[in-house]
Every structure is written in structure tokens, then in C-alpha cells.
Amino acid sequence: MLRWRGLDAVPGDLGRTVVTIGMYDGVHRGHQKLIGAAVARARALGRPCLLLTFDPHPAEVVRPGSHPAILTSLDRKAELVEALGVDAMCVLPFTPDLMRLSPESFTHTVLASTLHASHVVVGENFTYGHRAAGTVATLTAEGRRFGFTVEGVGLASLAEEADEVTISSTYIRACVAAGDMRSATGALGRPHRVDGVVVRGHRRGRQMGYPTANVESAPYTAIPADGVYAGHFVLRDVEGASGARFPAAISVGTNPTFDGTRRTVEAHLIDWDGDLYGEHSGVEFVSRLRGMLRFSGMDELVAAMDQDLLDARALLEL
Image (cartoon, rainbow, N blue to C red; front, side, top):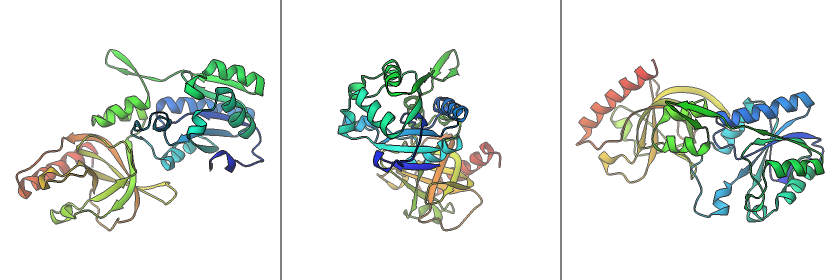
């Protein structure tokens, strides 16, 4: 998949495209439905499918200090959308100047002049332009003027007991923050993952017979609620592509038994040992086993970790 950052990097010989627009944070099941529609239309027209996304999250520019937790890094987003059939991804820096563009200016400058859209696929609740004044209806009207058609795709939902929950990044962030990884998985269509680099910690886990990979993630990453989880540890290459996966018991929190103050994500790879320092990695959260507890001492903590490992093995069917 081709990938560019900024409009200046878009190739001049791009040709006509099918464009889908959005943050696509999480690339959840609703996003997958939308991207599927765009890919299908692109294949039918014999044109590349191009996904237009933004960085940083627009909320941080519109309302500084309101940056939401991020479900997928740009590298992970690229990996996921490529697997869905997207041919190119353009990351548009969301700046105050971009925020102030009128809907018509955005359509002309970005979609028509630079990305050469012949068809645009967006969610039915899509808004764009200054003060989010543009809607699917205005985009459709502008498309008639600038030579492209528009398709608005309905939202996806989940049946949750007696109620129907609309799948959204906001809903999934709430699930992750609560440690409800099963609901997050249901909406994402896969386990939530935290990407980062393995860094050196205090090495207490190794002293207790449970060495861990301490994964340091980027700012604003959506980290699950404190606790112990069953999941997987994934090795990634420097470009973000996923490689080998290992079953893991994962701890999230401040290590209260040792009076810690900094939240960490630490994965114990089950039945594996080795040096992972400096490795690009991802930690996938399948299910929460328990909350984070403060223990009276090392022996009590190790006994709890013994049980955590048994519970993780059972849940992961090892």
C-alpha cells in the first residue's frame, strides 16, 4: 500500500481515485463496513481506493487539551486498512489552517484538485470544513460541481442485551477505559492492541520468576484499566508490520505493591524467555482476569501471579 503525509507528497500522476475520509481510529467494524464499500466501488470502477485520514486528532486542534485516547497508531491503522484492500493512505496534518477551510474549499483543494476523486465514500454522519458545517448533503452538491459522486454509508451496531449499541470509536474507548475487553473486541472485530517499544524496567518480574516486556507506548494511547489481562504479545518490524505472536499474561498499572506511581504495560510471554529490549511490539488484550491489587509482600504477590498464569492459560486454551 502506498502511503503519504501531506498533500505536497501526493504523486502528480495519481489519476482518478475512490476516496474514503475519516479518522478511522480503531478501524472497527463500522469502519470496516465503510472501507468495504469504498474498496468495492474502486474495484468496480477499476480505480485505486485511497483512504484520507488526519493527524493529530482534530479534537486537539479544535479544543486544545481534549485529545482523545487513540485506539490505533498510524502504523497499525495502515496495516489494518491495507488488509481490507485499501491501495493508498494519505495522512493529512490537521492544522489550524486546515480547520478554518470552508467545506467548499476543502472539497476543491483536497478532494478535487489533489486527490482527483471520482467517487467519495463517507459515513452518513460525516461532517467537514470550518465548524463542521459540511455534511453528506453539501458534499453531494459539491461533488456534482467538481465531478465526483458521493455515497453515505449507514452506521453499524451491536446487539447488547435488549439494546442496540452503535459502534463508534468513542464507545470502544469507554470499553477499554473500563477494562471491558470482550465488548471492545466485539466492536473492533479483534482484540484491542497497544503498540510501543520494549524498554528496560525495574526487572522485578525476572527476580520473581516472571520476566516481563515493559512496552512504552506513544502519548494518548488508549491503555486499558489497571489490572491483569490474558492476551498476546506481537513482534512488529520497524515499519509496523505484525510478525510472531506469543500468548501472554499482561499487567497494567502502577505496581502498587512497590509504591509505584507510573502506569506501565508489562507482558509476561508464556513459555518463552529471551531479550526483547528495543523491539517494536504490540500487546493484545483478550480478557481482564482481575483488578490491580496491593499485596502485603513478595510472597503474596508471587502466589497471585501463579494464579494469574493459570487463569491466562485456561482462558487462552493453552
